[in-house]
Image (cartoon, rainbow, N blue to C red):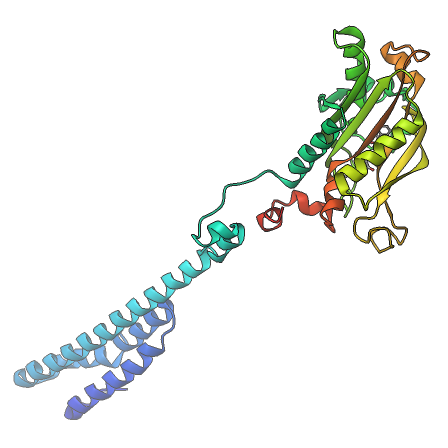
Length: 365
Ligand code: FA5
């Protein structure tokens, strides 16, 4: 638009109307800046008009000057108003982006505190709860609870358990080594069985002596590829009984008594021949599938049974390693996954969920 001095008032009105339309259509600060430049910049009709004022008669100059100043102020006002609107929209958008989902608070809360909208206090992780329940079950059966180190020497994790260097059974456990080789390998224990060795050593050397009826829970580490039933850092609970006249029937009876005490009377156990270097004979023990209660389902591959752990009679070579006379004493040992136990008990499809720290998962237990 170019200004025609003879029609200045009408043209001022048209300019204001045009400015209103353009300014209201500016949807960002950049667009608004450009619109202002088009309306009021050096090349705008308004500036061109200002430049012409000098050529007018003094009286006309005053009148048109005032009119153009009013147009300029009006456009300035429209631009400022639109700027404020855009700033408000921008900060609302930012707040919405960074906003917490307050409905999650209710998700994490128990029904009692949900009404108040408060976060509940934290609670023990499912695996810790399961460990404590397992310990209680075994304590109720006459066992005591012992612990051992997570960082072990090769001797405790392998050699004393009848796996000398180069024994092929070491391959059963893919190991994280902290220091491989001389003078002795240091590693993260692959199972809780080395705690058997610590216990038997201190029973022989210390005051407690024999017999032993103990369970030993703890964290274990393996270079296992994570899947629905395996994680690289998991938990086992080991059992060890050393007494006079202990037989395989005691082992089978103990496993069955534990299974019904912990899982309920509809769940039973069975033993199947297996191999572990530190027990002879050895077995895998299975329990009735907790998902289908023995009928057969996908989880148990339609067998009705699920493997929980390994067991067997303490190998006399292990007794030799710790200085216990195997002609006088006999015993059994077992070991199974605490995480696997929780998975079975609470029917958790994928064990990896236990490590993800998603409180919506954890608060279910
Ligand atoms: C052992 O570790 C033997 N030490 C058990 C044992 C003890 C046998 C005493 C005889 C006498 P195994 O590698 O099968 O055995 O592991 C036992 C159980 O630990 C498994 O059945 C499973 O429940 C659990 N487990 C093993 N690896 C993992 C893993 N990567 N993630 C979760 N659970 C695991």
